Amino acid sequence: MSLLVWVMMGIAIWHFAVFVPDRFWGGIVGAFLAAIVGATLVGLFVSGASIDNPSLTTALEAIPGAILGLAAAYFVGVRNERVA
Image (cartoon, rainbow, N blue to C red):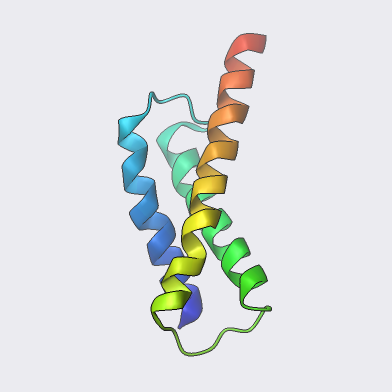
């Protein structure tokens, strides 16, 4: 169940991507995938790779990962614009 919570938090944070210019690597779909992957990886790392019963802290674990994933996709997209 924790995996589901991390993915849902990644999707929830992804919705805030509309407030920045669309320069994400892969567009809005790339931002979607980056938020989900980031939230899941950081959630797994923080929880010690154990998927157990979710709680409020389980949801909070995913927020930094989703933000890091979105930031990475954004900066890669900006860098690719300058090169092209």
